[in-house]
Image (tube, rainbow, N blue to C red):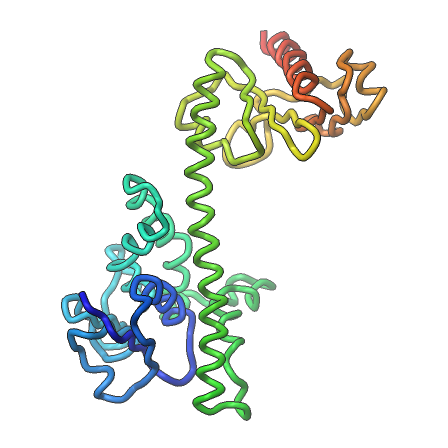
Length: 309
């Protein structure tokens, strides 16, 4: 496919064509982005992709509008904006361009669609009002992006083009940050699964650094794990593991005798040289060395198992 032009409408911009532009400009970096409503630009051709303008949706002709009668809908009947249409047809290729594992792409595509694309689609079609966010209404991404449009008496083609470019860069930063987090979670899951295998039947998971680990524990069915140890800056942390994704209840708390203690007091209460801190809520503690953190973890496990008995 030799795409020379990415065509969307001129004038005021919205989140849907901005975010569509984020996807398409990465996939077709050589293409010129054209903002126009002129017929010669918004008529389909083999050298262009047209979106959020043109009055038609035809993936084969590479035109992705949603303003016409009989506009496309999601399988569940919810409306699509140009962003939803572009994501439907180009999202997998966009994710692949970041080097994410191919077997994870369908799941990530669906996850991003549900959590990021769908809200934009709904707001753009008037099916969801930003005001539903209450006091945060003005802080939603579609609203924030639109605030970058030129004000009424400072407009004109040059001002609009400059504002669009500024907004596009900001929109790109948000999308790429979300994708980067997906990639980070996948890497963390792989590292945590390796650590879980190494832990075997033990009750302490030792990680090489602080990272998301909940998904790996669930995937491995590691219900026996009670505490996590990992380095943080110059110290080591010992933390509990939440029972589920919701709430803060832990599988096991750190010993009650440690609650709120620091330094020498915690060393005396635990009997572990190098013990530095235990939160009063008993969900996290810190130690000066790996050996001290593991010793504290061993004591915490023993007490937890007595309580469970």
